Image 1 (cartoon, one colour):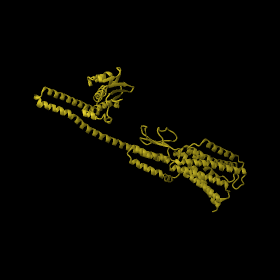
Image 2 (cartoon, rainbow, N blue to C red):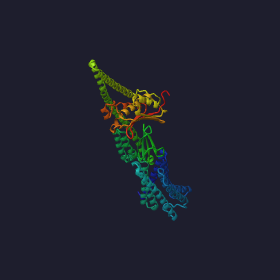
Image 3 (cartoon, helix red, strand yellow):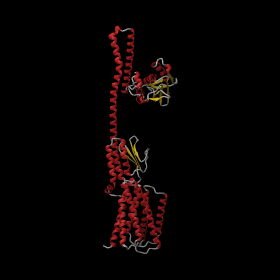
Image 4 (cartoon, one colour):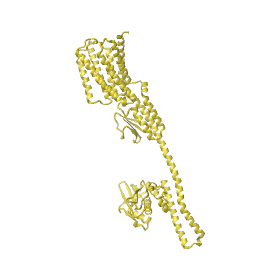
Length: 575
């Protein structure tokens, strides 16, 4: 077989390869209907039309129709590198200067093509003007194709394996086609050995274009192996972890790497951001590069690379699958955390119950023992006791029975508060008058030690039982553990009522502050003096919280203890 025959065969193969490339690009656009796919169809479709129609035209066109067709094919060839540049700009806009350079070079060469007086056939003598035109065409083709190839190659650096390889193949194919065109311009038509090399290079560029534009699934699988391996490890980590934060930290980097995303957000059903990488909240709004994937219960917002939808569509599906597994892992880890918290809460409640029973029995033992001893003494020695002894025993009986009654009342209060059976009925209360009455009943004879600084006109809508129990406790504690003067103030804002009881004593010991509101907790000093049961502040805070408020402690200045009752405003009962 002669070199000419081989060369002719290669021409047909080249035309078929470029025609197939154009058909694949057109099918791609019909499926996706996106900007990049449209420019790919125009770019490679024009190239396929040039290759295919070039085989149908005679080597030396004679008729007007043949001449017009020849000029049209050359114009299509001139447009190819510009279309390729526009294809790259569909992902990321080129600079205005580059846009103008490409448009001016292409438009000028198109006008020159149309105005050419004659196009010599293969092997005919080329005039100086036509030679200059050929050099200009090769230069325009080389400049624009090289720029497009560089943009694709550079952009592929930060992309996942499949997208990066596809972009770089398109870049290499553009350079190979430029080299083939350059050789066509220099090699004589009758040098069949070199022409074979040129046609082989053209065929190679077409095949490389095809591989970059629509690689077979087996090739994609080979390219995708690094991401698949990392994704497998991430899935293994998802199955092993029981902490929601660890789930998010494990999977987010892989999600981002899988599609070369700028940022990834995992968003809960309530709109709260569960985790993010690459950017801080707020979650970006809709846009051409924002992918929102519903994963059932949570959603994934991906600030994708502009190249991801075109070059990484399969990776987006993998991302969806990984996201679905992430949703399952998050649900599982949340259930585990809830179960662990419930188990800890139950253990703590059991410990508190056990401690409560032990402490209550311990606190009740002293007055019960005392009462029993007094009764037994009166029963056995009643006739032989002097009046003074009888009076002392009667006083002890009254004192210990009162202590026992108070403790039982407190225990009953705690049981009702724990069972949430304490009714809350807010009613309008004149605060100053109520506080003064509580001072008179809870601290008889100590009116001068308590300074009530509350406006006469202040009225609060609050449950009377809550108010009385909390304020009485605070006044009693201030006089028992603090020192006079005790100052009582109150104020009301738009949202809360606040009452403050502040004494002038030494204050709460720093080491005891943490346990101040715990049941049966007493400072060493109070325990040594046998004062109180350690239930008062715990009950007072529970009453405040049953009302939707709170009881808090602060150190007073320069010394002393400051307790503040905070209750949210609410309408009076029945309104």
